[in-house]
Image (cartoon, rainbow, N blue to C red):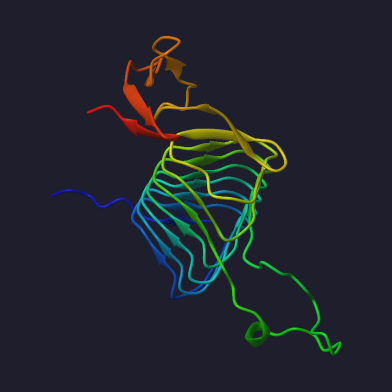
Length: 203
């Protein structure tokens, strides 16, 4: 009989009763996981992190200490969210309405950040919704993402701009030769083809 990994939730974590937490996942000290969150298996939510209402996370995600993942963010399998990252959800933030009354949940519509499979968001980066970070992309520490990031792109800066391509190992790719559209991972040897600014794995 195969033993099913148990969920680990520390005593100081605040996890909503109706949150769905996958087998083998760990939620550490002072983290908060809100109502209707759906989290896959073998995920890690670090100390003081916040996972907003209705956020969905795939399997094998890591959300590091003090990251803020506001609803309605969507994280695919294998996503890495670094320490103190912020995924926003309000395009035009205001505390009050034009008449001076305090805004309620009914006075604005949340918009989310989508992080696709295997992508990584570096420490203290901010993704300003609505944006999508493509699969296996890397957002450098401290970057501010205000537009969609292509798959396999390495972006950095304020606002974030593409500096290079990266493979699944996260290592910057090297062009096969000066005129080639083929890129090679120095770590794994995997090959990728660039076409009109889009990178795909070589078939």
